[in-house]
Image: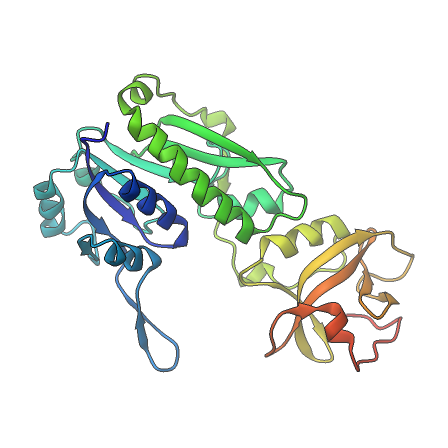
Length: 310
């Protein structure tokens, strides 16, 4: 249905492939809404959201309201007369007054196979829980938190070393492709929409720095998944020589009867840490105030004796 007039709402990198795909396929994008610009760093330099940068590159009108509940903002959206509003990680809740504007509703691209992993961190939890598959869901927004009817799902297998960063990239592209498929066949998709099974719903809270400190008493597999979950941000860490040492990559290996956190093996390329069950061979690290590096580089000129406890 290429004659649809769209209004696009999104903010982070995850939203950009969908905006690009809609533009490339010739859809009429009346305007793009994104979060207000932010000041970052010591110099308070103003930075644009990735979606704003892409919209300006494509020559699309950009709006950045502080609130979607402002009557003037609602009137503006109503004046634009969108047939569909596309919402992807916008960062604001749409009030009912806006949900009711487009004739075909408000479509959301969600980074999980709903109703599993509703909420703020669906991609992180797929990695954290060691899921074999993940995917995207195109749903109709309602007033609930990711509770709307499902129009289409698409899934992909997870790599054994999948990180949040790599899965974000894969799902952002899959989401763009799936969204375009839905819009191309919107009448049929809406005619066959399905309600979510509330009994199967799970919610995910935002993952922050409070989970970043590694607890070596946990099983090696659990810690290894946490490391991948926190890549690229904020990064899992342990303490070495009084400073933070981020761990970016590790392999589960057999352990010993040493206490959790004890370094049980050192080579020229890696060191191995005992956990609550099995051990982790550390392959990539980041010393405090330095860049990410292979463990082999970290160990150059550094003597780490076995038996030291992190």
